[in-house]
Length: 327
Image 1 (cartoon, rainbow, N blue to C red):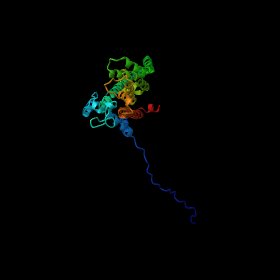
Image 2: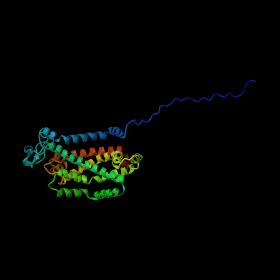
Image 3: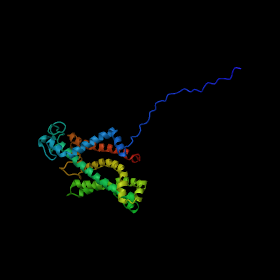
Image 4: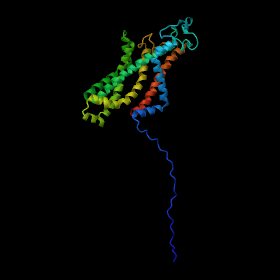
């Protein structure tokens, strides 16, 4: 008999070609945290612009004597021929006396070259800001690491000292100290006074980081291996807090620049004839309607410097201290 059983066809499934998948970019192997941070900073346009602005002002401050000599005028040299004595000493010519001889114009009444005053003012302002920042960072980092690592009575004493320093109305105290101390170097005094009230902030940041690092495995291993406190603090703890310290440093520099400008604006900072951006802004207030260039030039320099450091500090904080940026 013929086989009448139903014939079953082989189970054939349509063969589908593999679809191309878009793989996420693999992390760059072999790069440490600092190389990754540098690569991330290069990808941000705001960081590039900020670095250019900061570099220009730093170069201008360092080369201030050369630039003023190139312009042909010193910051204290008067040019009575550039102002009109019959109009209250207003600069001759447009835009506050801008000419081939005076690139940014001149000061009213005195006729001093504004370009020379601005570049030397950058030198004074940035010198005070950078030196005060160095004092704050060194003192705050040392106090924060010591308090966080040793704990106990050391932590209590240093923490109460931080609270005591931060409880002072710093600006009022700065004005009082700068007003009383008259026959001293104003630049040195301003640097010390500004640094005196700035260290507790970074000390608290470093103390918190140190508290989270002192019981890590590699710190315990170094302690068991016989390493002393100094070696542990410098070799194990300090590299762990370096990222937040660098980010915090770039954030406090614009505050230092603004503090110096505020003290000079209030008349207790750098004394004439030494130029300073804050001092120039204070003197230009009386001429803002008749000679706006005298007000705009130092104000724009101060604004650009503070903005560039602020943007750079924000970017570094997001990259080096992401937990701090989210808090």
